[in-house]
Image (cartoon, helix red, strand yellow):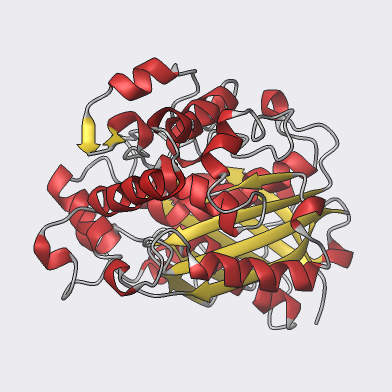
Length: 380
């Protein structure tokens, strides 16, 4: 197997792009990645998306977006794994280059959510859960997060303020980021005063609707001397529906994917200089930090509140704002995360830079942890 590198990164600003469609956003990100890598010659295309079949009534995105790029004839595959789609697509792209199937791969994710009605967006998010045993009850994705949130508080004695600090930290880190949706600070009092989405989860603890696209060029490491090495990429699945889990406060897929990735990369959590985790709500971010091995189970909320995830802290986390402040364009989110780690390791993160970063990790979740993609990048 060949060593693989991220040779180019292209990120669009996450926003409400009323004037742009799926093809516009995707091609914008792709051309930024082409320019960054210094090539437009690719052997394969992987496209990550979650909501297009419902929001745009559009499937078969691989062929559509290959055509939009003027690359007819290139094999193009659509990848769907709910909000983990971007991370899983990256995993597939890495395998294609590592195996020798392709020498240059474009992996891109795109989502156009602002055109959808609220009930359409909520329906899409609910599709990541079991329809027969869970979604039919009418519970929303945020409602399921609320069950976990409440259980965490009762089990470990965490306070609402401690958990909500995950959102505050994300907004602090987004300041100065050119591609983030909400690059401004938010005080803890404002978070806790915002309306309840599903008690005890406040509105400002939830990632918002956003449009965006992220793209990366993958090449053999020896052909991309300025790139960032892919030290490991791993995908794992866990129990699909919440009611069937032994412990709703542990995401088994995260633990499994992380253990595999650490083993392949030859590192431990202590070797990771920064991390991008899936904070669809504040509690998923807290639990992710725990299940990735950065903090003891039940101590994640206080770890965040104590400042350990700040840019100068023990484990700088969500350094461009995470899902909460950078934005969460579903199928593209995992690729934003990996792209942000790559920019950090290359010293190109601008005001968001973590000084001296050598190794970074990105974790994206599909559903409430039923799929997890973990990627570890290393500075060459």
